[in-house]
Amino acid sequence: TIQLLSSLTPNHTQNLHIPNWVISIREILHDCWQDNFSLKELSEILKVHPVTISKYFSKYFNCNLGEYVRKIKIDKSLSLIRMNNQNLASIAYTCGFADQSHFIRMFKKETGLLPHHFRTL
Image 1: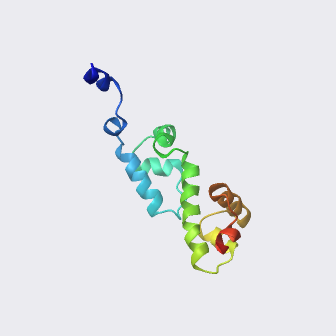
Image 2: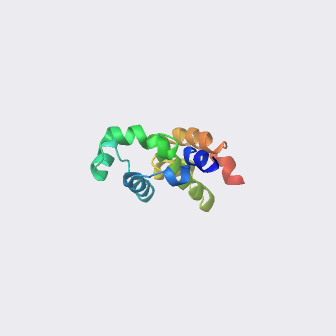
Image 3: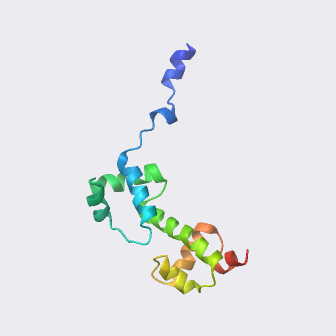
């Protein structure tokens, strides 16, 4: 009976098959974080239909594509804020944000802190 019940219970670590495109898109987004890829460009690179990426991205990354890219950019900004005395506008531009205001809003949303407060920690 125990064997029967255990076979009915899904084992997420064994049954989770991660498609190759998921691994590839993660590598592309992390390696080329400063590039702004469109969904169409990514689908052409990966040879996967854009609807497939859009539909299943959140299943593997727990957020949509745009949110994931912003998280990567915020992560990159953390080291820039800590390591040098660049102004926030320069860091925002380096990390691919449209302007300092957008960068500050996204930084606070992701970290719960304002960038200048993070710098003082």
